[in-house]
Image: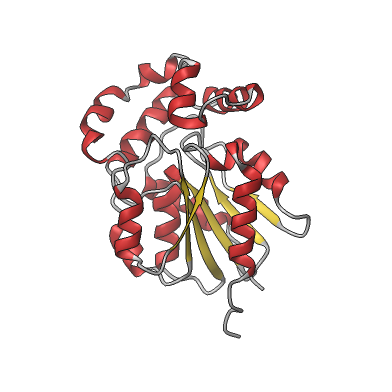
Length: 237
């Protein structure tokens, strides 16, 4: 039986607010700690590392769960192979540029001004939440993004486009679960392929959802995740 404590690393918004439905979908015996990043100042991946280190338990066994933007942080932490880290779960994540050949165009467009404009619902649904997204979920997403400075959001996009955590991924030894969003229109297919190439033992599971899979299909994602963790072998000693 695997551990029942999760440490959750958020997506681009960094607030952790968007985990609420996923946490509610976990069984009662499970616990989760949410890591939140500053909303008013941009911090690089290197600068964000202490937020991860400060949130993980010192001795209790736990699983690190990372959404999209936070994937390089989870992989960096796992690369040191901490004794009480039992596994890592990646949700629609990446260890290199998430949009592959489009990175130059995305980088040119992802300036602070872009994040000062409320995106049309069609764009949000196409890239993030999928068709016919519930109104309350759209509201939650807008609220989380509105809390974050446009300069911070722009900086995080640039940081993600330039990231390279492939060497860290090679050094990881803990079990890895990669939750793939079947209808993801944001990430390049190379993102999953890099995990398959660098860690061939990664377990891949598909969730019929858009990029924000924990938000759109929290129950399905929680069920897959809990089954994976519960089936992990006991840690030595």
